[in-house]
Length: 297
Image 1: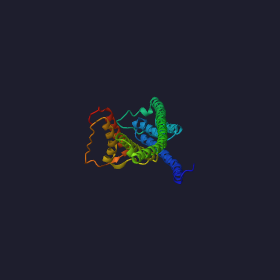
Image 2 (image 1 turned 90 degrees about the vertical axis):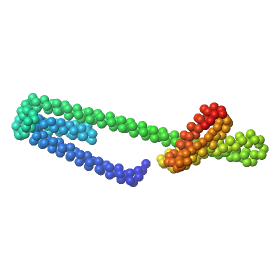
Image 3 (image 1 turned 120 degrees about the horizontal axis):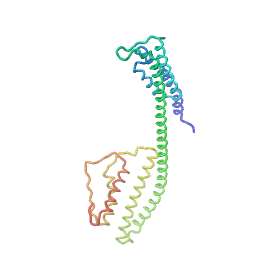
């Protein structure tokens, strides 16, 4: 299968852009970790609560990069924090205390330094691990959703194609029946008695309505397959009148008083005329079906 030219261009440009973006993110995270370490050094070292900001960079890296790269960032952050703590603890670099905030001798306490380092290391590994677990589950859920959505779209397409084929076949049969009834009504109308003529007229009207229904269904299915917009402007009065006529015929058989009132202010509306017609048709058919003889609709 040959891809369109614009698809190839887009795919090629994407392959070139993504690595460059990742390189920029690598640079930003590395410089941010180093800058954070310098800020901590000049503002209390490991005594500064801002040391927890290392974890934010680990989480961001876990969201963007693979597990291996994320753990490498965690190791780099642990190395920076350890170097800062040990160099200050053993007086290789000066310590800048946070005046009036914490005990200034904590950075010299080796038990505190190594204990905090152990907790920091364990927390870093746990943060990266949890972040990747959440990300991997989210990706799996998204993949399952996309797969299910594709399957539903394929099934909907198959259903529409099946409806299209069946409706096309039904249309041919309905047209043939309509032609036969038309022959009866026009050619041998004089040979029929009043009852036969009434029933032939009613059969013609119902078949004509059925032909219109099949035609609408055919058009709607074609639009769905082409992903065309099925909404359009139409006169609601015309749609309802198409539905009312066959139901008035049915109500007449049960001696039901069938009346219709439409607000004259309702003219053009936007929607799917086929589904609106189907809605009113179902409502009126049920009304005729469940209304007792000599009743009123």
